[in-house]
Length: 242
Ligand code: NAP
Image (spheres, rainbow, N blue to C red):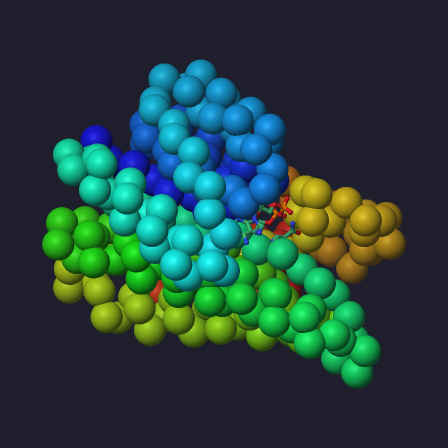
C-alpha cells in the first residue's frame, strides 16, 4: 500500500491536503504534534473517502522523535511505502527583528526549515530505493517576497524554497519530484487573529484564499498531470505577488 504523509495534517491547510489526496485515492498518514482531537477528526474524514488513515504523532523539530517514529512505521509496515510527502507543518511567531526574542527565531526555523530536513531525510532513502516519490513543501509568499515582522518566517520559508530546488536536482534521476506551493493569506487558525478586511484592498482578488484552494494545487503537483514539473514553486495568493 502506498501512503502520503502530511506533516501538520490535523488542521487547516494540512487537513485539506489530507482530504484532497484521500479523494485522489492515496492512503494517508496524518502527522500532528499536540491537537489529538483535530487529528482524530481528520482521520475520520479521510476514512470516509474510503482509504486508510493512520496517525503519526511527532514534533517535526525533534530530530530523534521524528526519525524514530518514521523508522518504526517503516519497520512494522514492510509491504507499504510512503511515496508522497507533504511538508506542511509550520508556525509563525511574528515580531520586528529589533524586538524579536531568540526563541521566536529558533522555534520558527526549527519547525519550518529543520523540520523539513528532519522529515525529508527520514523518507527520501526509501523513495530512492523504490524509484518512486513525490514531495511538496508548503512555503509562503513571505519566503518569496519577505514580509516585515516576519524575518524569522521569511527566512525559514525562503530556506525551504532553496532546499526544494536543490533536492529536486539531486533526486530527479530516481523518479522523485520535489516542488513547493507558496500560499498568500489563507483562512485557517494561523490567520485567525488577522482582520481580513484590513488586507483585502491589497489583494487583487479581494479575498483570502481557502485551505481547499491550496490543496488543489498540491493535488496537481502530486498527480501525473504535473509529471514534467520539478523544482518549481506555485504561488496561490489571489494575485498579491508574482
Ligand atoms: P494551522 O492551521 O496553524 O495548522 C498548523 C498545523 O501544523 C497543525 O496541524 C499543527 O499540529 C502542525 N504543527 C505545528 N507545529 C508542529 C510541529 N512542531 N510538528 C508537527 N506538526 C506541527 O496552520 P495553516 O495555516 O494550516 O498552515 C499550514 C502551513 O501553511 C504552514 O507551513 C504555514 O506556514 C503555511 N502557510 C499558511 C498560510 C496561511 O495564511 N494560513 C500562508 C502561507 C503559508 P497540531 O494540530 O497538533 O497543533
